[in-house]
Image 1 (tube, helix red, strand yellow):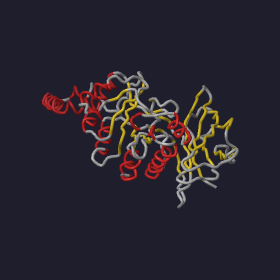
Image 2 (cartoon, helix red, strand yellow; image 1 turned 30 degrees about the vertical axis):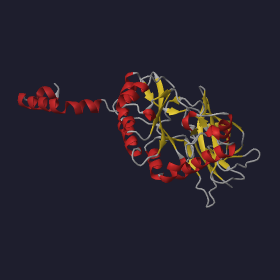
Image 3 (cartoon, one colour; image 1 turned 180 degrees about the vertical axis):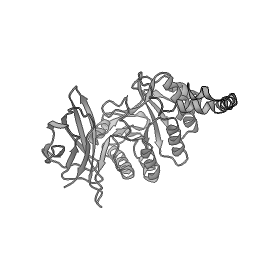
Image 4 (cartoon, helix red, strand yellow; image 1 turned 90 degrees about the vertical axis):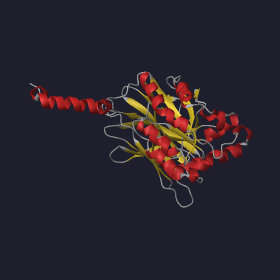
Length: 349
């Protein structure tokens, strides 16, 4: 006989009353993220917020996203990032992804290549200074792009991200209108919103509820395609380790991403990016998890320690990189049953 059946009628009546009073709480606990995994069977979408960080709204925006159990991508303006480094770190610490939205939000297509480079490089440096990691995603202001803009992006190792849905929050859209726009998101889609409007913050619970009803989940943006994909398992961006730069602003960072997977192995790619000043060479370190082993390496010269789990990679040619410039090397890992992503690091000799 269950404990409930052994209760006296009086006790049962008290419990019944308590259930009536706390029933909402009980339901909320049952539906919490820790109690049941989200159903993402229809795919992933990306929630994006431009033009921050802002002292008046960024903290509220982060709190609203966290309260509703979702992560988003913040495309920060470099000047604001430099002025509000604590808010940029708060974005990172909350598990959000951070992208480059230019230094001063100009019409980039009206600028020279050198001016565009300055806009993007200064922003890379400001965000890296705040978080320890330079962005890999870039959204051009106003969505304006051309061959020159794309060339500069490529030189800095940035992936251009536009959008499939415009919330029109910048154009005075109400909370209901923002929610309605988000309801058209489909798998892989990206919605444009902004850090700066209370109507946008107020829309978050309804946006999340609608996505949940359609078995869609908020994800990250792929650095390969610029489209939404599944999150990376809890990290606030690509696996990255930053070498503290010397006083001159040099140093380098290393970031990792998996590019392909088969039944017994996967390919990984490491991006080495220079810091605030040019570097003449670099050394990357890749640490595997046993019993993994690397079978092939390209675009770099590898060596291993005695365990076979720590691989050191140096440039196979000229290792010089301009300030903010990047290069990549890749490798194939035989998983041997362990699919854990390797950790990566970079140092300058």
